[in-house]
Length: 273
Image (cartoon, rainbow, N blue to C red; front, top):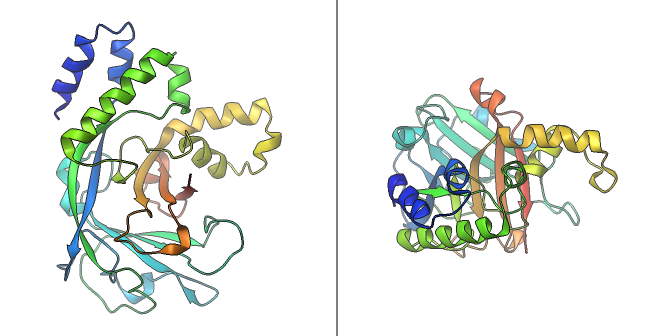
């Protein structure tokens, strides 16, 4: 559904905060996984082997991270104005047993930006997930109910209900439902907010149970400055990694780092029901 059509739907509701609701719309690229296949060089994919040089393959304590996804920015350059226009984004994660928490600490996951699209030799455990090509669908998104944008814009419960109804209609139109897989736009949070946790981790604020007002203010200032690089829903049976159950991975990057093409400070937040 085009943005002009969504705006018309909102305006037809005569909602008091209609213009504020419209201002919250962000375009995203939702995607589904096609049937397993040999992926052409330098194309978007989930699983398989990354098309990168040996020196890019990340590991932790000599244990290679598992390759999750490769996004070809050439595939989507005409649909976004935030990411680099060409090259590859490659996503990796640790699958080793690290106790009762997710691999979301520094060096337990990695996002690698590869300017070149020339295929190189690949070393490491790269075939944990079968290779699936990706089909993108452009879809507009709203922030989740606990995001700071909701508070800052004085969005009421009635407005939230309208936004949820519109999102259901958008999902129905695109045939994509539930949390799903996504690039850009507002993250579809399992637990109400993702941006808060991105900002807290970025600022090094770990003790959320004892958070001060000053720390909360810092988080609120930063959380809207993050861009969703990849949302990957492990409940999709095609991915087939039982290690994460029905969890969803949210890779986010601060706008300042993205402008510098610095992917070393990417934050990973994982949530489940």
